[in-house]
Picture: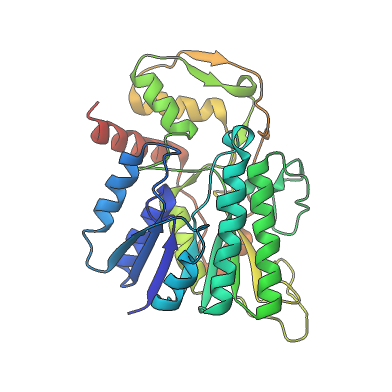
Amino acid sequence: MPKALVTGSAGFIGFHLCQRLLADGYEVIGLDAMTDYYDVTLKQRRQAMLLQAPGFRAVTDRIERDGVLQELIAAERPDVIVHLAAQAGVRYSIDNPQSYVEANLIGTFKLLEAVRATPCAHLLMASTSSVYGANTEMPYAEGHKADTQMSFYAATKKANEAMGHSYAHLYDLPITMFRFFTVYGPWGRPDMALFKFTKAILNGEAIDVYNHGDMRRDFTYIDDLVQGIRLLIDAVPERPGDGVVADGDSLSPVAPFRVVNIGNSEPVQLLAFIEAIEAAIGQKARRNYMEMQPGDVPATWADASLLQTLTGHRPQTDVTAGVAAFVDWYRDYYGV
């Protein structure tokens, strides 16, 4: 039975990925700090569901705390590590940047050091579409310039990519970074727009629509994302012996390191997204139109052709179906 360590296992993406790995026959160790960035009860419910599977074990601790990852990885020797634990949120990084230094920078450094001491067959780490920042060349491809991050959150994730590449090069550690594009679906995060909008509409409250709705996002359904990660686990990067990399591949010429977009490749206008929520709920939203928030970008759009080349998978869940699935979950979970 292969063994996987998933950091951030009680989070939105971590929870779904752990479920998938367990279904595929993995033994899964889930590490999560259970922080109160959002409702801890939601994280506890996710973890309780995972604990129903005999192949799952939970560890509650912070990745940045000295010795936690070093000792856990040395003791468990997982075949695969998927690093999802992070302080998330573009806007929160303006108010509390220190938490991003601790979780995203120090925590990831501690992970890389632990893997250097006890290597695994494949380390996969979460990045974000936010690293593309002010880049206006779309759809975003992995080889595009990504040096103009618009938020400190994005800056920490770009730093994680650079840190990962250096360790892959120096210590021959196979590392894949995946850049997520606006992930949504059942059990989602309360700080995300879909959760906020659904809650407000059902409560008869107005929703805040930034940049007057003139925004586009490449919304990616959680099942599509998890399928992409699962398949990438088996697509282990190898250091090219001659330094030659195929066209369209983001494989490093000097390390077993690759960056891969996971997105739906179909940007949706924010107003159309809101209309999908209204249709699923059967109720119109009262809209409070506002200016763009600091750190936000007007659009995201993934070129997911490398993911398809590597795995044969291309996310394609229609936003109408995905939103309806979330609303169904929300009504059931909260009894509304």
